[in-house]
Length: 316
Ligand code: PMP
Image 1 (cartoon, rainbow, N blue to C red):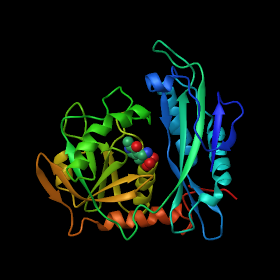
Image 2: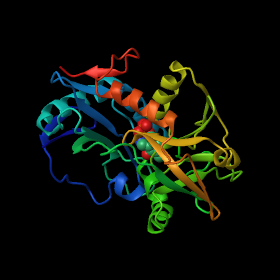
Image 3: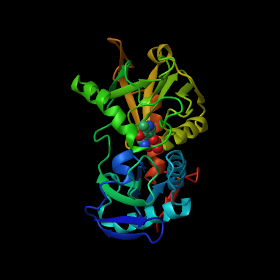
């Protein structure tokens, strides 16, 4: 397996996947100066390989880099590096219908820095891993618990960008929820403590009749690329979509709830537990709208449907 490594955005190159060296006083190790991205490559039936909106990941990395005082690769550099890495690992891409190649670009302050300050040197690297389809046999609902004590983000913080520290912040609530049998945690806003934010690694949507609502991204929620795409797909299918505050009461009164993210694409929510009260959705937790949107988006991503949105990038 090959990975891509570029120091200070000079002459990136592919190399054998393996350990990398870091100075003990590297910015990423001491001050969390690191960002990552996640996207997937799918093999299509004709042998071509498809990426899904990679320039969106590049732009999100750029936004994150500005927030934590790092330079970032240009959109072109980012996309070219992703393409080169995927092509170099073509044999690891699962056959059509069997999964995808998960791509993890990582940007870090690799230079040495003792006092709190931006690191003087940077490393951009990309590694990959084959992953199976998230749902092996039909869609399975997840069960979420609303976290009322801990928050993953606060206004003015880094919740809206993909810094590594955001993920350390969710580990405690997530581990506690999993130990109790829940799939994951749904976070609330840290100011009013009654508006939905997101799950540890996906965005959340609620459905009521023909209306689909999702929390607006105002700096504390990661602007998911799947989220943005689902909003457009849903509108193109005649749904009304609103991005705004969504209260816990609205959530508990919804017809259907689903989450979106690169890993899950669309994941139906079977139940939500809030302050000990468990609310279930539908008879089997897999709502009609979740199924419809999952099928529409995965068909595009896998190259099974014509891409009228212009979102897929062919590598050959
Ligand atoms: N929120 C968080 C906190 C995430 O880590 C992710 C995964 N990147 C998402 C939402 C979904 O984003 P995307 O659709 O771009 O994968």
